[in-house]
Amino acid sequence: MHDDGLTGNRQKLWGSVTLGGSNCPLCATPARQKLDLSEYQLFRCNHCGCWSSNAAAHRSRTTFEPVNYFQNDAADNQRWREFFRQYLADDDERVALLDLGCGTGAFLKYVAEHHPQVRLYGIELDPTRASMARAQVPSAHIYCGLLEDFAVTSSIEFELITLWDVFEHLPQPREYLEILRKLLKANGTILIQTIYEHSLLPSIGRLSYYLSGGLIKWPARRTHDAHHLAFFTKHCLERLCRELDLTICSMNFDHLAFARTDGAWWVRAVAAGLMNLERCFGHGLFITLAVEKSAAPSAPNGKSEERARLG
Image (cartoon, rainbow, N blue to C red; front, side, top):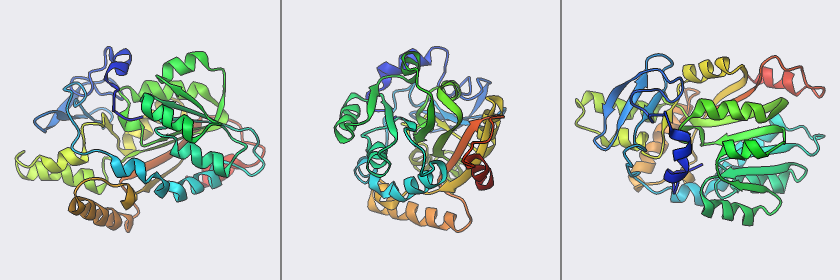
């Protein structure tokens, strides 16, 4: 789910949400301003540790266009193969999968080609990308609109729900996860991949701001770009899952493939070098967690036991 053309659609969601500032978008408690990036500010919640931005409320523009990000999405094929190795047994038939923020349909296309037995559903706010997803994956049911509207009309229980680089775009991540939990079948899995605020790149962005007394803003802007609304730590994600009665089955770190990075060549090169360095220590730009409804019984095919070992 991406920001192009979302302003009007988000009005239904925003209501009492302040998009960073007085309230944390994750737990709704007061958040304190930590960085002033001129066009918008970054805030940190002392209660849950979540970071947020008020860039959307200020109609701030992004510092780059995600051209490579969309054109080279096949660079994530290995990541998707590993996902299905862990969470889809060979004998699973007619599994229903929902991809929230499906974009142009790259992930759904991969699933259709490699796991044709899976029933595919996608939700995308941007009409142009939703149309592209329908063209790429004719077998998928693509809903163009808001998750809460889809949930009202859908009677499907999903075995798999995925959010690839989506959670940081949501104005109300807690409420969205509550809706997704209701759409999840018993023993089903929600997989969330989002930016890890304590990874090297965001940390350097904040550090450059602090060390310069706020004079150097660009690194923090680039690592907390205006198209993202929330930035998550391991602690705040664990807290959120506990409060929503979700069990974390696995949590790991990953990086952004170089082919999918955007910006000037030297920015991409420096970012790639830092991400490779971070991988040596077992961390990454992305944090990926798989969650299930708490206290769900073990699956007959033993998938729940395998997932617990992965955690």
